[in-house]
Amino acid sequence: MFDFLQLVNNENMKIYRRVRTWIMLGILLVLTLSISLLTYIYSGNISPSMWDLMQIQSVMSIMLVTVFTVVIAAETVAGEFSTGTIKLLMIRPWSRSKILLSKYVSLLLFGLFFMAVIFVWTIVTNMLFFGYDASPIMGSDMSQLTYWLLNYGAEFITMIVIVTLAFLISTVFRSGGLAIGLSLFILLGGSIVTGIIRMLDYAWVDYLLFANLSLSEYILGDASSITGKPLGFTLGVLAGYYVLFIAITWTVFNRRDIAS
Image (cartoon, rainbow, N blue to C red; front, side):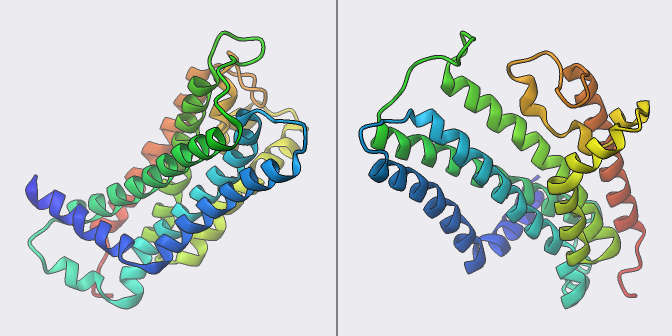
């Protein structure tokens, strides 16, 4: 267990010692703060609710966190192959599965860290500018804070699936560019493609990955507005894709000839 934690720590050091990581975090903090500050300056006599801004900031920041994590995922294995450092890892007294799992865990911790920081940051900055609004969600007894905690949790699950796909592509094809491109296509264009295919009225469309990524829709409703299916169905589909991605990633990595 200690060896594995050491591996995870080594991977974390690779991520957080790079200036790029802190530039990414700085971009997120500055952008969200700018929205709050500009709204405060130019809102005049109209005082918006802190939660109104949270809506705008969260959509933008969660998207950026996912993109940044995909970028890290695309490089974490493919980068080792391109620089040749993967051979140095293989001669260490660790199994391939442990090495790959340490990279994957550090990747998820990176996404979780960014998500947590941006959530706390937006709540605190909006409270400072506009005060705390304790009113519940309109038409519901759920508090705004509870809603946004659930929203971030749902978006983190979605991010895990997208990042796992990027991790798979990075491992299988050893191409960071392909991992980033395909993952971002699914993230940004998947819903559009699903909408077009849905016009054909095929039942299998409900089983597409992109059609089941909007978990936040279930927070206030029993079914997705995209698939019309209950939460259990969506989670089942995502779990199926997740297991498939993980199985392919580990199988290919463990059988690959590293010397080639």
